[in-house]
Image (cartoon, rainbow, N blue to C red; front, top):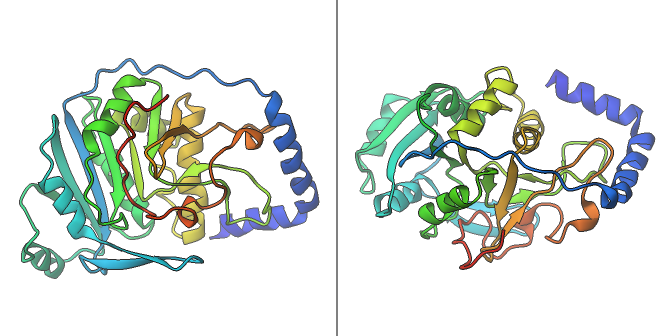
Length: 307
């Protein structure tokens, strides 16, 4: 919390300059040279890690409302069990459930539901960094050091729709060895700031997909932890976790992309200190969930997608 408000204080002090600087970057961005991407030469293993993080206080089926547009949809842990139970694709799925504030009563209740199936590894974790406590546990403790695996990091706010996506999304990483991180929703700005005209597109963290080789690089470049894992204040978790993951994967040299509601594959542009790609952005601005019919939904990839 102290770090967050220290930075907010600095922003407030220099806000006139920082506002102008953001507008300058929007202009200079059109002259920036598109970066080349790092090619990941590791061979992907046939075993895939699908990790779900849950807070023990949530119902297994619940309703989520997107603020400002009052859009409601069903979500919850049950639907992750359902989508993985019906999967019959080409890969072996290692199913992991991390639960913050977990206890014996919760595990007993879970195992007594009609949707529960054996096969999930259940790991209690602390709730300090919310989703990032679970995500970081998976990345720090459960990645096989001898394999390069596709890793899904999700929470239970995913829309209930059961769509086929696992094999198609994995194929993206095979087709594009420069792809380091994939998501299903984004925001084009940091909201936790006084500099409201910022343009910092980043993936939203309720669904992230990467390769274990990329995640290992990310941990190594961030002191052994996933960005956000050591934060305990909600606004800090978003700013120094969710936003930072996208930007650090880009700084490592990899491509970051999003699958839009209509199944399009779109690359999130890199931003530099002196420029951004504001003039080239063609998707809706701000929080993508405010613009779509089905927020938080995993959408199938459009046939014959363009890279």
